[in-house]
Length: 461
Ligand code: 9WN
Image 1 (cartoon, protein in one colour):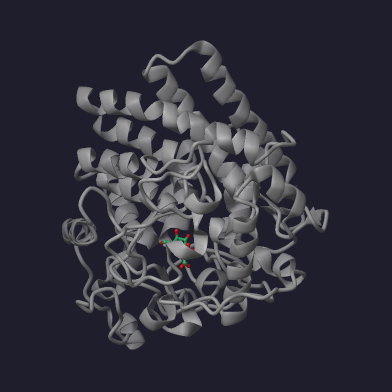
Image 2 (tube, protein in one colour):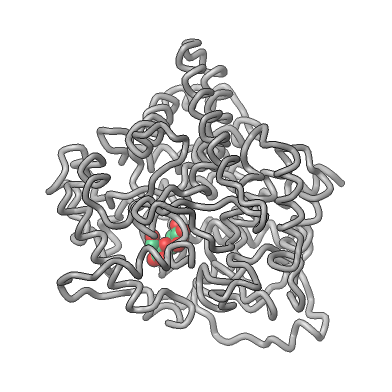
């Protein structure tokens, strides 16, 4: 262990002493260095010690960052991930590195190849998914660093992206509602209070003893609790017993949530995939199919809007009702192409308002993961309050796509200021009132989004 990725102590007072900050050039060099250190050879691990395998949506963000410094490697990240795609098109949330043996719980927990014929044989993977940022990453790569060679490789990747979107549209939304169903909190924002009520209803059955590496790398108060973790393990055991078969799971599983954030990402990713399809000369029918998926999800996210909260809400299928918990996931209407203008404008007000980037006392006015006034808000606890740069990037990107340039710049500036302090160390997430880095240091997607922000800032100067 080289000690990287682990905090040595944080001097909160340094903030008030106008601590030195990196110049854009230094920030860029440092971000590139993080991604180089986390390079495992053809793909990049999310963090030096906490996350030694390949994670799905991390890979997409890493590709977005690398597009700015090493486009070939950027595409290689996605190619590596998609080489572990399942027979039904699903892209697993973790592709395990056989050389990283000390991560627990590891591939045995999932036993994917043993219980499903659809799982790849050559490599061990998990059986669940994460938000489909991948087509967004590919289109961004084409926008900023297209070349004949890249376009040729994208043409090879395209059918895999299409199969992934088809899996999401058909298997994860058999009702055709436009909203994607998730089966596990690990399918995105682990211990977000979005899932609390649904998890609380689930009695945890007998689970074998299991080990956790995370709490030996990161302070336990910044990670999910052991009660939460027991439930995560229990849900995996149910999914594994169902052979990761979507139809079986949708009949039997106790945790079924229509995830509004994942659906909004999907809607945006369909717009990107449509453009990719056109570039690679895909048949017209395929392009219209992708467009229909995207529009359907966009409409469904719009229908999930809650005017009183100024946020879009998930729906708990088992409880049969919306989940009225205010988190940054509810700001995802900003990602949806052609979202109703009044709703998107209202969302921006929520974003910059007192529950998120406008909360009083913030070290930097960036978006909190859980609303400041929410009873579940806890500023150090993982997805329950801290600020996550990748979530901020997604919302920023959404605002650029809808042409809300001033708002986008207003969100990018404090994020870059937060990350430009050398003591920020590209952390996984931040305590919002002090700016203290939390979770892992040298987190790849944090470095990656910094690279993209820097490049767009430079272009707009
Ligand atoms: C479990 C890698 C991943 C992210 C997730 C984040 C966290 C893992 C964990 O780390 O999840 O998959 O151990 O908590 O919640 O979004 O992809 O960075």
